[in-house]
Image: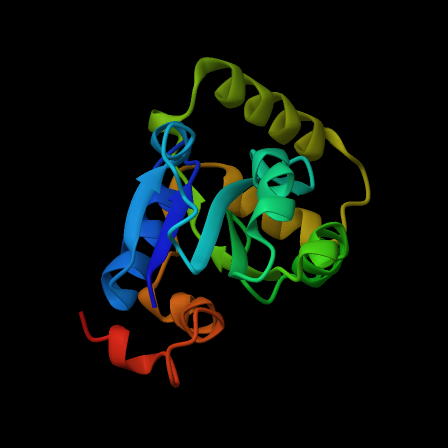
Length: 182
């Protein structure tokens, strides 16, 4: 397998997962800005990773535009977000994203990351603070909203190498676990 992992990261969580996947699989790893200037035709496995942004994977439109040229290749995409993997909205997000990418036979995965307010752009930090303020002001909050307030009130990290296992399997590694010990 000649593989590559391409990622778009804002605060470092997606970059971390991309490097973990590349290390475990022996694939090359490039940021999206680097990958845009490379010939990727020699790769038979291509994995794209981005962060959760307004119900989509950041920069997934670039990846989707490449799909016709990558027909016949093994393709996967992963998204990194601040919610735990068992959050009810994650399954909806994955189903919606998989539907968008299904024409290209892309498998889609979610990896929990966290929040790093210190690494966010000023605009993203402001948007999150406004969202948090609105959520706190809401009357009759659901338990999920209370949990969200608790989680996004400050920076945190819930990333873990074990969440790359399904991506490694999608890349064609036997059971994926051989790359987790790195």
